[in-house]
Picture 1 (tube, rainbow, N blue to C red):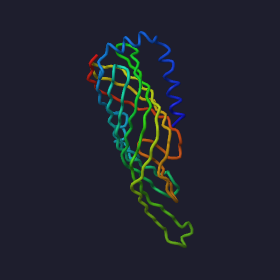
Picture 2: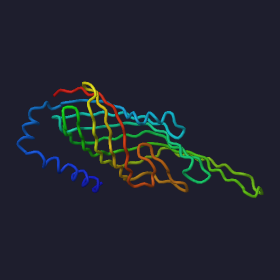
Picture 3: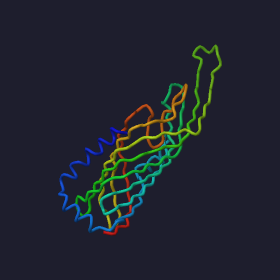
Length: 221
């Protein structure tokens, strides 16, 4: 957690040093307190609907204050199938997750924005699979042992850099570059959790990710 906060502060430092304190204060004071509200969808995840290995859907919301400070939230559903997770085992995890956090917005031009944010994320999910043990000699009968585990959870943090372009009035398209940092999850024995909805493989303590989104904003500035 401390590492992600430190990274976030380093990212924001050049932003504040690039603008004088006086000009920043005048700019902020001229904006309404709630300057924009937006909802969006991660359209990159919709491609998973055509894959056998995954199915994902994610929505997001964003509030902007003084056209500078942002509050973001996201909610998603995912089903992940990993037939190569463990030897002789098929594996599926499914569940939901949410993220929320705070960030800072920079108007690069009349149509382009950049955001820096730090987010907390949590997933609630279950996993299941079948262990297939085959006797190579044929002396013993083949064995299929199913397993299913419910009520699992995980939490992590994300450092996010976002860029977007206005397509038409309040309609924007953009992308998020994320660094996911695992905090903790419900470890299992003898086979551990392999994939976590919204995060990825459990044994990766940090995961970079790229997400594509489209959003519509009601703006008051």
